Length: 32
Image 1 (tube, one colour):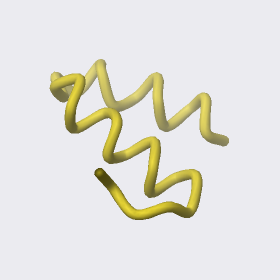
Image 2: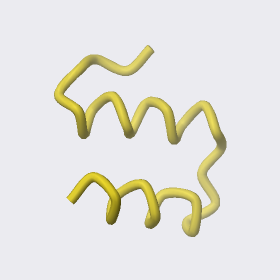
Image 3: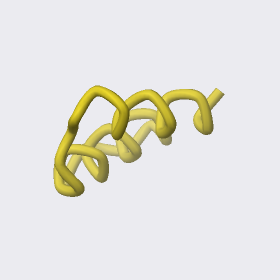
């Protein structure tokens, strides 16, 4: 599931910083 989210985020034109935040949320942690 995480892989799908990570793949979808960059395709939507998200920045690396935003991607990191999404990864943290997907992992269950608070975004940095």
